[in-house]
View 1 (tube, rainbow, N blue to C red):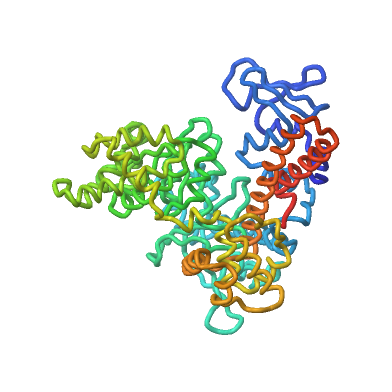
View 2 (cartoon, rainbow, N blue to C red):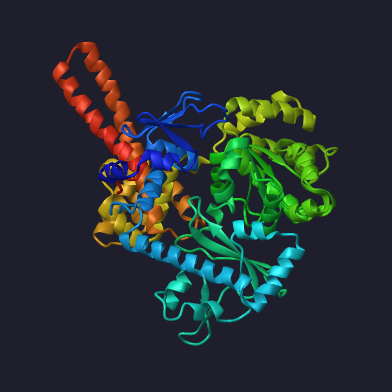
Length: 580
């Protein structure tokens, strides 16, 4: 916990709290209006000596980590990293990324920041930029909006950005890793990725430039171009604009999700700030989970054409599965949010958003359109498709209410819908998913398909990590084979594990998941190890109860010491301070 102690020593809570509210000194303490709820009289108190805060109005309180976690909507490890970077405290080497990877991340952040400076200068201080600025103004964007969103312009040149970085501490390979340039046909030849495009920088939650999006001004294809996957940017894990709007979303408890930059910019300029953009129409589980961190309600407002409506429909199962209350806003005349608000204005848009269709009704209406409800076989398929989505809702009470509503929309008895779920619960449709834990399953896939990662895991995994799992003999055999440099073949594996397990191993090894990374492998191992420790802790607790009941004081003392050790290990894995 050395890093946490260092942060506590240098991160003055008064200074951090002052980022979120105006404080004035009263005696030894500071007071101000609470940043967590609306109030007229100040009830938010910060104690600089104890490094604690408390609101006597809403009851919020804690230390500097609690404050940052609540205001920035970060997990504890994220808050530690945020504060460590802010106060220039080196993070421990025992981390998910190697020191080399962390160094690369920091270099890419700096390059992205420099590239943004170049793009913004090109917009405001070049002839090409003047034309781009005129285009943006004709689209109705004000200079204030462009400044807030830090919009820029990439010159219509093959090497403008590449030339800008010549002679600076950024070689071609690093620029390529940042996704800013592409290799040409000749050796050592590179050209700019973004050319003749309005540039919208993409920021992390903490305000770092992680990527870029560009809208072509010269009818180039594709019309919208994003940065590729880089060490600091993954499109499916980011919601554009959240760095500006997260506090508004949190206050309203509702997030309006649009598709692209211009949709976001137009709504943002109109004063609608509880929004974000998915930068595409394939909403991922990561993005839905991220949205859920800030608001329990989600309004999906993609384009009004068939592609946008289909994308909204595809997003619903994930939203239901993540426990979000989801509505779908369908704009008239196939308009996108940008076009609609420019034609009709803020109030009309807000009025429509209040009347957005519930996710359930949109789901039922869309599925019903795929068949005929007057044909029994078609109706059964439609009903099963709807129930298949609703059964993923994690809260049983919420799921029950949705089934009640769906029975009315589908004109099917509620009891029959419940029977479908009950019957599926008894069917072995997903035997391999029930047989394996998610991390267990992925680790087995990695071990079977990647010899290099198998060798790495062979040095990291302990028998305790998989003890008691149904796959224990498989792990033991594969890891032992890897340690002696022997390839795993299924016939030998089959003899070692038996027919039931080999059937499932064969099945999961055929799934197309994508190539694993070292980080993913260690992440899965971390999850598996945490589960093993939690199982040990549960067994230990039962023994502790027995010893307390029988008055076995000496043994009880040893067990309590073991419990403390196990608890520390679990917390360390959760906080990221211990890594396999």
